Image (cartoon, rainbow, N blue to C red):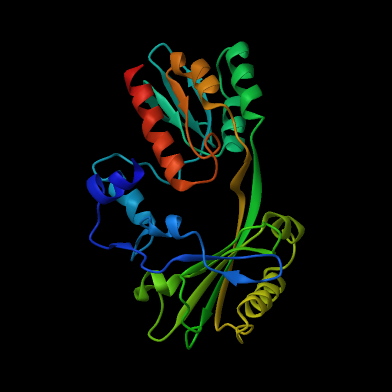
Length: 281
């Protein structure tokens, strides 16, 4: 379903199928070819970035930005939404909540609905947990050595690096001429241990680990950046059917990766399925 949405209804001119495969590596840094069957599947991306899909899906919709909704109030007509200042942000017949389950829990705990309904939903939402992730961007001039793959994934989940991608292989427009960009997604255990460590120290350590893994002099990038993702990967998911069985009769529903696991296409498909449920309820 998600592939059909990307290549059909929300197709964009800069949609590309990444030509090179994904290879794997283990705790000792041994690199080998990935699963040939999985690598036969299309690997869709956009030259201008993945938010191209979100922009395409938003066309024709009234999208409100930079408004943090902190609580809901159930009314006879549906739901009233309130921002952080207590101001009414809008009134709607139905509400679809697609934020991380930990944030959804805070929202429902603060909302005005019956105690039984609120506690039933919160009990389920409390079961969700996430693995944190530190993402490090490493830019080089000239570009790193050409490889037969565009990304590496750690299969035994014991290495400090979980995923390493050559962003300039996805699209040369992402980097300056003759430049290169690597994105290192760090493993949950590494991310937890270094969550409070100064960004410069983490970046330096990651650059050295990348250089060792690739056996290439890449420990001194010319451009760097770092991002913390506290709710990056669901560790424990919530039973969406059980949760929405409580919520749907109220004109409320929940969707996202917290209910299906940390795969973008599964979260997208879940959102479509739940949207259809709430639209038909």
